[in-house]
Length: 233
Image (cartoon, rainbow, N blue to C red; front, side, top):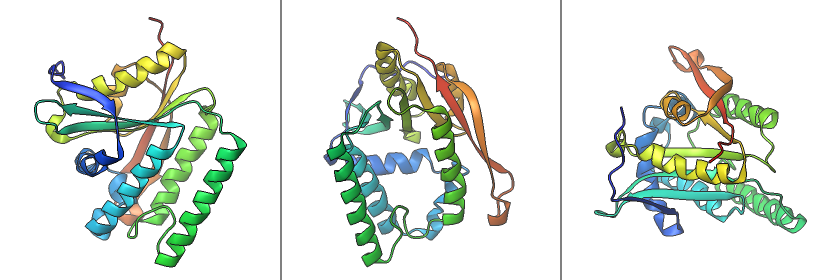
Protein backbone atom coordinates (compact mmCIF):
# COMPACT_ATOMS: atom_id res chain seq x y z
CA UNK A 1 0.00 0.00 0.00
CA UNK A 2 1.37 3.43 -0.93
CA UNK A 3 2.49 5.59 1.97
CA UNK A 4 1.67 9.25 2.47
CA UNK A 5 4.03 11.50 0.48
CA UNK A 6 6.83 13.01 2.56
CA UNK A 7 6.33 16.72 3.26
CA UNK A 8 9.25 17.89 1.11
CA UNK A 9 7.38 17.13 -2.13
CA UNK A 10 5.65 20.07 -3.78
CA UNK A 11 3.66 20.66 -6.99
CA UNK A 12 4.14 23.54 -9.39
CA UNK A 13 3.53 24.38 -13.03
CA UNK A 14 6.09 23.20 -15.55
CA UNK A 15 8.29 25.74 -17.32
CA UNK A 16 10.25 25.29 -20.58
CA UNK A 17 13.44 24.95 -18.54
CA UNK A 18 11.98 21.80 -16.96
CA UNK A 19 11.76 19.87 -20.24
CA UNK A 20 15.18 18.13 -19.99
CA UNK A 21 14.24 16.84 -16.52
CA UNK A 22 10.88 15.55 -17.75
CA UNK A 23 12.34 13.18 -20.33
CA UNK A 24 14.08 10.73 -17.95
CA UNK A 25 10.96 10.71 -15.76
CA UNK A 26 8.84 9.77 -18.79
CA UNK A 27 11.36 7.12 -19.87
CA UNK A 28 11.39 5.56 -16.42
CA UNK A 29 7.62 5.61 -15.98
CA UNK A 30 6.78 3.97 -19.31
CA UNK A 31 9.81 1.71 -19.76
CA UNK A 32 7.79 -1.49 -19.36
CA UNK A 33 4.43 -0.36 -20.70
CA UNK A 34 3.30 -3.13 -23.03
CA UNK A 35 1.67 -1.13 -25.82
CA UNK A 36 4.23 1.68 -25.73
CA UNK A 37 6.96 -0.84 -26.48
CA UNK A 38 5.13 -1.73 -29.70
CA UNK A 39 4.11 1.77 -30.80
CA UNK A 40 7.44 3.43 -29.93
CA UNK A 41 10.06 0.63 -29.82
CA UNK A 42 13.14 2.22 -28.30
CA UNK A 43 15.45 -0.23 -30.06
CA UNK A 44 14.35 1.30 -33.38
CA UNK A 45 14.47 4.96 -32.27
CA UNK A 46 17.83 6.61 -31.65
CA UNK A 47 18.38 8.47 -28.41
CA UNK A 48 18.88 11.71 -30.34
CA UNK A 49 15.62 11.28 -32.24
CA UNK A 50 13.75 10.30 -29.10
CA UNK A 51 14.95 13.37 -27.22
CA UNK A 52 14.14 15.64 -30.17
CA UNK A 53 10.65 14.22 -30.51
CA UNK A 54 9.72 14.17 -26.83
CA UNK A 55 11.18 17.63 -26.17
CA UNK A 56 9.22 19.05 -29.09
CA UNK A 57 6.02 17.30 -28.02
CA UNK A 58 6.29 18.68 -24.48
CA UNK A 59 7.18 22.15 -25.77
CA UNK A 60 4.05 22.23 -27.92
CA UNK A 61 1.85 21.26 -24.97
CA UNK A 62 3.30 24.13 -22.92
CA UNK A 63 2.16 26.56 -25.61
CA UNK A 64 -1.41 25.27 -25.91
CA UNK A 65 -4.01 27.43 -24.11
CA UNK A 66 -6.05 24.33 -23.28
CA UNK A 67 -3.19 22.43 -21.62
CA UNK A 68 -1.79 22.62 -18.11
CA UNK A 69 1.44 20.85 -17.16
CA UNK A 70 2.44 20.17 -13.56
CA UNK A 71 5.48 18.68 -11.87
CA UNK A 72 6.01 17.19 -8.44
CA UNK A 73 9.51 17.64 -7.10
CA UNK A 74 11.64 16.98 -4.06
CA UNK A 75 12.49 20.31 -2.44
CA UNK A 76 15.41 18.71 -0.59
CA UNK A 77 17.20 17.77 -3.81
CA UNK A 78 15.44 19.75 -6.54
CA UNK A 79 14.82 16.50 -8.44
CA UNK A 80 11.63 16.03 -10.43
CA UNK A 81 9.73 12.95 -9.29
CA UNK A 82 6.86 13.09 -11.75
CA UNK A 83 4.75 15.20 -14.07
CA UNK A 84 1.29 15.29 -15.58
CA UNK A 85 -0.50 16.97 -18.46
CA UNK A 86 -4.09 18.11 -18.24
CA UNK A 87 -6.39 19.29 -21.02
CA UNK A 88 -8.89 21.77 -19.64
CA UNK A 89 -12.30 22.71 -21.07
CA UNK A 90 -11.63 25.38 -23.66
CA UNK A 91 -13.29 26.90 -26.69
CA UNK A 92 -10.78 28.19 -29.24
CA UNK A 93 -11.33 31.52 -30.91
CA UNK A 94 -11.24 31.80 -34.70
CA UNK A 95 -7.87 33.52 -34.45
CA UNK A 96 -6.45 30.74 -32.27
CA UNK A 97 -7.70 28.13 -34.73
CA UNK A 98 -6.02 29.94 -37.60
CA UNK A 99 -2.77 30.13 -35.65
CA UNK A 100 -2.92 26.39 -34.91
CA UNK A 101 -3.59 25.56 -38.55
CA UNK A 102 -0.65 27.70 -39.64
CA UNK A 103 1.60 26.10 -37.03
CA UNK A 104 0.54 22.61 -38.10
CA UNK A 105 1.29 23.50 -41.72
CA UNK A 106 4.76 24.75 -40.79
CA UNK A 107 5.38 21.59 -38.76
CA UNK A 108 4.33 19.37 -41.65
CA UNK A 109 6.52 21.26 -44.13
CA UNK A 110 9.53 21.06 -41.84
CA UNK A 111 9.02 17.32 -41.27
CA UNK A 112 8.81 16.80 -45.02
CA UNK A 113 12.05 18.70 -45.58
CA UNK A 114 13.75 16.60 -42.92
CA UNK A 115 12.35 13.33 -44.26
CA UNK A 116 10.47 12.31 -41.13
CA UNK A 117 6.90 11.75 -40.00
CA UNK A 118 5.01 14.93 -39.14
CA UNK A 119 4.00 13.64 -35.68
CA UNK A 120 5.88 10.52 -34.62
CA UNK A 121 9.62 9.88 -34.16
CA UNK A 122 11.58 8.08 -36.85
CA UNK A 123 11.56 4.38 -35.96
CA UNK A 124 7.97 4.30 -34.66
CA UNK A 125 5.82 1.35 -35.63
CA UNK A 126 3.27 3.42 -37.52
CA UNK A 127 0.90 0.48 -38.02
CA UNK A 128 0.50 -0.03 -34.29
CA UNK A 129 0.47 3.73 -33.71
CA UNK A 130 -2.52 4.02 -36.02
CA UNK A 131 -4.30 1.07 -34.40
CA UNK A 132 -3.81 2.38 -30.87
CA UNK A 133 -4.21 6.12 -31.27
CA UNK A 134 -6.91 5.80 -33.90
CA UNK A 135 -8.93 3.77 -31.39
CA UNK A 136 -8.19 6.24 -28.58
CA UNK A 137 -9.29 9.16 -30.75
CA UNK A 138 -12.60 7.40 -31.40
CA UNK A 139 -13.09 6.86 -27.68
CA UNK A 140 -12.55 10.55 -26.97
CA UNK A 141 -15.07 11.52 -29.64
CA UNK A 142 -17.55 9.09 -28.10
CA UNK A 143 -17.20 10.05 -24.44
CA UNK A 144 -15.67 13.53 -24.10
CA UNK A 145 -17.13 17.00 -24.51
CA UNK A 146 -13.92 19.02 -24.83
CA UNK A 147 -15.77 22.21 -23.97
CA UNK A 148 -16.95 20.75 -20.65
CA UNK A 149 -14.72 17.88 -19.49
CA UNK A 150 -11.18 17.61 -18.22
CA UNK A 151 -8.80 15.12 -19.84
CA UNK A 152 -5.80 13.81 -17.94
CA UNK A 153 -3.52 13.17 -20.93
CA UNK A 154 -0.45 11.96 -19.06
CA UNK A 155 0.72 10.96 -15.61
CA UNK A 156 4.33 9.86 -15.19
CA UNK A 157 6.13 9.07 -11.93
CA UNK A 158 9.80 8.09 -11.96
CA UNK A 159 10.30 4.53 -10.74
CA UNK A 160 12.65 5.75 -8.02
CA UNK A 161 9.73 7.70 -6.53
CA UNK A 162 6.90 5.25 -7.05
CA UNK A 163 4.88 3.81 -4.15
CA UNK A 164 5.37 6.96 -2.09
CA UNK A 165 1.93 8.43 -2.71
CA UNK A 166 3.24 10.95 -5.24
CA UNK A 167 1.02 9.82 -8.11
CA UNK A 168 -2.03 10.31 -5.90
CA UNK A 169 -0.77 13.70 -4.74
CA UNK A 170 -0.19 14.92 -8.28
CA UNK A 171 -3.45 13.58 -9.67
CA UNK A 172 -5.46 14.90 -6.71
CA UNK A 173 -4.16 18.35 -7.57
CA UNK A 174 -5.89 18.00 -10.93
CA UNK A 175 -9.01 16.35 -9.56
CA UNK A 176 -9.50 19.12 -7.00
CA UNK A 177 -9.60 21.61 -9.88
CA UNK A 178 -12.23 19.56 -11.69
CA UNK A 179 -14.29 19.07 -8.54
CA UNK A 180 -14.25 22.80 -7.80
CA UNK A 181 -15.81 23.39 -11.23
CA UNK A 182 -18.14 20.37 -11.10
CA UNK A 183 -16.52 18.72 -14.13
CA UNK A 184 -15.89 15.13 -15.17
CA UNK A 185 -12.36 13.86 -15.77
CA UNK A 186 -11.48 11.42 -18.57
CA UNK A 187 -8.35 9.26 -18.62
CA UNK A 188 -6.86 6.44 -20.70
CA UNK A 189 -5.38 3.94 -18.25
CA UNK A 190 -2.38 1.70 -18.75
CA UNK A 191 -2.26 -1.54 -16.78
CA UNK A 192 0.12 0.10 -14.29
CA UNK A 193 -1.97 3.23 -13.81
CA UNK A 194 -5.39 1.58 -13.56
CA UNK A 195 -5.30 0.68 -9.82
CA UNK A 196 -4.44 4.26 -8.83
CA UNK A 197 -7.18 5.75 -11.00
CA UNK A 198 -9.71 3.29 -9.63
CA UNK A 199 -8.69 4.22 -6.09
CA UNK A 200 -9.23 7.91 -6.86
CA UNK A 201 -12.78 7.45 -8.10
CA UNK A 202 -12.44 6.74 -11.82
CA UNK A 203 -14.77 4.12 -13.29
CA UNK A 204 -14.26 1.91 -16.33
CA UNK A 205 -16.45 2.97 -19.24
CA UNK A 206 -14.78 1.18 -22.17
CA UNK A 207 -11.59 -0.50 -23.36
CA UNK A 208 -9.44 -0.64 -26.46
CA UNK A 209 -7.80 -3.94 -27.39
CA UNK A 210 -4.90 -4.12 -29.85
CA UNK A 211 -3.67 -7.43 -31.29
CA UNK A 212 0.13 -7.08 -31.53
CA UNK A 213 0.88 -10.75 -32.28
CA UNK A 214 2.01 -9.73 -35.78
CA UNK A 215 4.89 -7.83 -34.14
CA UNK A 216 5.83 -10.52 -31.62
CA UNK A 217 3.32 -9.80 -28.87
CA UNK A 218 2.22 -12.65 -26.64
CA UNK A 219 -1.04 -11.06 -25.48
CA UNK A 220 -3.57 -8.42 -26.43
CA UNK A 221 -2.53 -4.87 -25.54
CA UNK A 222 -5.17 -2.83 -23.75
CA UNK A 223 -5.94 0.65 -22.50
CA UNK A 224 -8.92 1.00 -20.19
CA UNK A 225 -11.08 4.08 -20.76
CA UNK A 226 -12.13 5.67 -17.48
CA UNK A 227 -14.23 8.60 -16.32
CA UNK A 228 -14.53 10.25 -12.92
CA UNK A 229 -17.64 12.13 -11.89
CA UNK A 230 -17.14 15.35 -9.91
CA UNK A 231 -17.11 14.98 -6.14
CA UNK A 232 -18.85 17.42 -3.84
CA UNK A 233 -16.70 18.92 -1.10
